[in-house]
Length: 462
Ligand code: PMP
Image 1: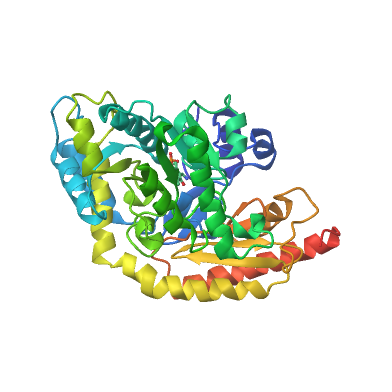
Image 2: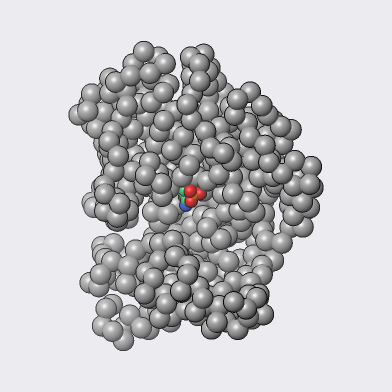
């Protein structure tokens, strides 16, 4: 085989990719016909592909590239750590300096008594930990029947068996033989699609109340925890009405049920606070973290756990759980450097007080587009609903996602990464994006919407 590099012709790279690489969440045949886009370099918010396109990454990779691409110091820290101690585990009463430093830092950043970190290499793994940990906690409390975890339809918690089961993506449940036992789902707080004639406030309360109904249906004595993303990300950047989270908090408190906030997307500044839980005003017992923890420079995730849970489980011998790469020293060192940069550059307050409000104004300005219904934004995660009728909040006559996909394709052609979830368009750019880059993002988004609108009209779908 020839040596492969970024100089290899794109067609050759695409052919090899199609022949040997199984892509996540991808229609393999469709991709093979089209050829994958080969990304070769990146800097700041800009990607470059093998054909020389300069692409604005409106999704921060997969919502992870918080500090922007091309930060040399992360590479330097990784190299230094690899030379000093490339690996050692934290099983069986050993530890190392990077994992100690990162744990202490996370305890400092996390709210309340979330002072204990169990590391994983991804968000999915961390949610696997959470499922086992909350069940173990209730065993330790002498209530082993508390096994049920309640999640939400259209929530996303990962792609492992536990992650996919906790999540509420029907398409994922179908592929892989259903969900594992002891997991239930309630409806999501998506007012635009499901709110009908209710006000957003009433709808938020009604959807939160479904948690109480579910708890009573399965028996409060059987429920271990509720899990939710403070703002649903992969489900389409669904921002719950203001009434929702306070009611969820009231219900979990009333029944003594643990609250797991999945902060994999919302954590580390995305919502304008260090954690989305602070933004929506909840007090979780566990937070799932990944992505922005290392800005995607290296795989790392984890669970930040309350003192009560850590001490209860810790007091009863081994917790028989752990990953070879839990607290990997290179990953921990890189994550620490990422957090150092976030603090040094005040990125969280930049999102809250500067670039977040700036993007919000521009994003909402897209609402005058004939095909755009609601526009939603929290910090630097935003969505808009595509609709043929803003007043009735109607869906298109075409299959769900058709128009979203069309619009996504126009964005691609205009060198903007904007994703679609069904007929919602979503963005979550790197937190370092500048005002000029936001302007550029909006110009490209509007152009793409205009082009998609023309296609939609031509095909008689509007
Ligand atoms: N939870 C949430 C909220 C996520 O958005 C994701 C990934 N998109 C995950 C968990 C899973 O993380 P990973 O892909 O790192 O396993």
